[in-house]
Image (cartoon, rainbow, N blue to C red; front, side, top):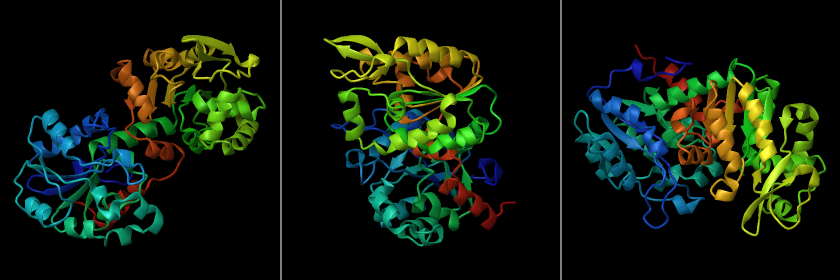
Length: 419
């Protein structure tokens, strides 16, 4: 048991039917509807291999996309084919979640078999709108159709879906109410690594916060400073733009229009409060990159506003300044790219900072989908300490919030003590 939750070490799975909830949610090719980045699928393999090698009957439950973000909402048949190839073992798939066909197939499984059910979010009970509108308690979610139909066929529930651990949905927090439950190896590793970051990190500890989802930075920034986790924050991306606006600096119409278009003006006021409390610990860019006539150029922050062009990356002098801080750090967390790294003219900041971190003999943790994509692009994923599968779950964990799935696993350990 770790942190009040059972792990695979606490159960014998041979011959047992395991309902195993993973997060293999992936960006899809718009035409083929197949995953284009399989990082989350790959990171689920350790638990899957252990289960099948030990003779479990493993029933995989996953979601793909959201009823709100409909463009990635799709069948998970391609995921089953990818897992089969990566594991070197047949993974059966059925286009049913908990109907008669799925239940019959589960009942006929043999030791070592793996069956992937269809996208659980095809069930109304698993939809985001169902979650956010009804706000059912875990006890109420245990009475949903998907939980009742599947739990009667299983011996244990296993959750390895850290990236979805901030969600409150039946296959994430309802099954723990009715089955002895454990966390998988990925979940175990995520929690262990993040606790290493949160609890007595080696100092100096720095957070590099960027990207376009600035809400993530604002969720965690009070916690990391008030609890003396971070010594400083290196601000990049739109996060740094909002901070500079809060200081009364004008960026220029193109860059300021993006802030308005994304509805981020509210964070300007929040930034003023944060700068008032922690201004000396937040390092802002001293120059930026932009493109004029197809070529990258740079402008010093003191020479803004730049009214004809958009600020798309941090500049060379900022990179030098930030690298000096990185070179002294013993613990580093990176969430969100420094610029629009997908475009060659604007990848300099992200590439240089990630490379500098990978070369440090320090504990380094990375989070967010765009960050993972950038690490893969530059071949650095294997040169850093830890890459989290989580996005929203990661940020909420670092903000000090106890995630719904973690609560549910702890409760299950009390409801169903394992000998």
